[in-house]
Length: 418
Ligand code: AMP
Ligand code: GLY
Image (tube, rainbow, N blue to C red; front, top):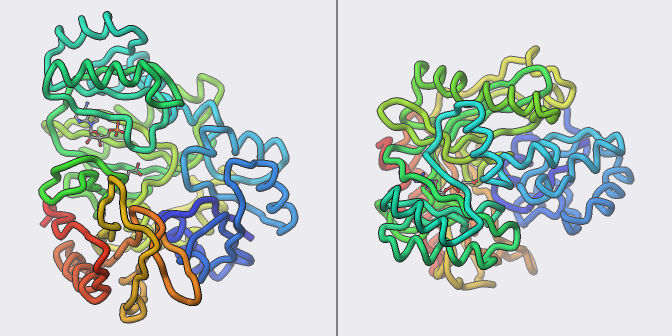
């Protein structure tokens, strides 16, 4: 019996993959969305109320809890549930700082010689000004704490950098007032995933996502407009460097700090001259990267989660399909600004659902058997095929059939690979 916590496309994709397991008993999703409702029982509860979640887990005799989003992890849901003898996959509150504090993550890189952009942490505007003058522009200005994807500004001018720095120091983000200023790295991004237990870790896929709202990767940042897998740049040689220079020293450092990392670790990397640099860590699966990985995963996800929560990952070989996969995010018009809500999405039943073709829901709800939009990112049109190009054609074809007049999407997802 499993419980999945969260309500996005990532959690729908996890429920989808779990529901294919022959070993699954009850599957619940807290709180879930219109997509998970078809595969799991949605239970509407506030995911920051750990006591309420614990009560549901006990009452429903849940064996393992999977936590999708970062906020409950950063707030210590794993500590809370483990203290009460519940099996749960994810890092504890301390280890979650790899994502929840960029200052923590950068400091760990510095102490362990992990390649990352040159940086300093500031709490004072005058000192920050001197650093910006020294390092020059473009400069990257980052909020220390969780900022729902809105904490990073790439500033082309000195004035923009000062403005962004001042906003963070003045408390724009509740999570922290510290600012990280760092060197702008030129290269190509790659998302690299591993699943980690106390004894070992296993590769858990690669992907490239598209964060900017507009085609050609232009315009403001979003939560992600689409992704494809495997990532174009990943070779055996590069992967060895990623493990040796980034993943291994990170996991060793967390172990020596007395908080071994456990769960899904997502390294956001910049590849420059075939060398990896760590841009950020996420302590969970990516959204929408998880959607593409779940169509490429051949092994039973339940076996993997079971092994990871028993520290038996080293006894399991995780298998992947050779196919390529893409997901295109259908958004509500206006996103990432103010967007249209409560608009009906028709025609979803026209799209076939099979192992190469899935629509994962994000911001949706069902009323009178009809599907309506509730969020900025609404649906993930996810397809797999022999090539990225074929997968994208299929996904675009499905989007045409859905033909939602209040929505928009990028037609160029995966352009680097195509
Ligand atoms: P983060 O939340 O740290 O991943 O930053 C969001 C996005 O900003 C990244 O995916 C990159 O596209 C970009 N970015 C962050 N840091 C840098 C950097 N030092 N150099 C270039 N681009 C960066
Ligand atoms: N797609 C980026 C993230 O999940 O953080």
